[in-house]
Length: 80
Image (cartoon, rainbow, N blue to C red; front, side, top):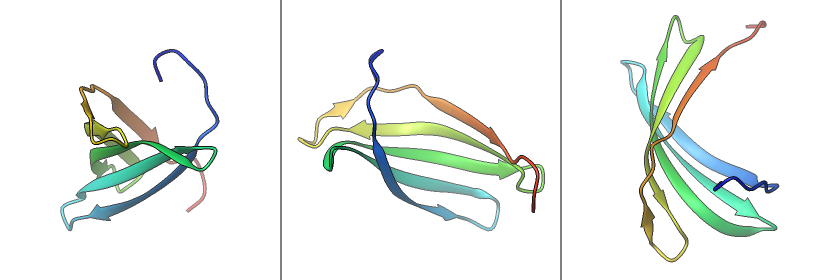
């Protein structure tokens, strides 16, 4: 974040609706301390072999909201 590197532990939950859209909330920890929480909108497509995410919000532990524009694309590789 901000051009720096950090080892992080990521914990989160997600929900998926019948139309393959959903939301995920992810918490990022460094050395066991919460450093930020992100909420992302997601959609699965191509028979659930691809996922696209757009970050909706990023909140610091002190409740400060940070403006964000992050997108993620993922593709299933091999296996079932």
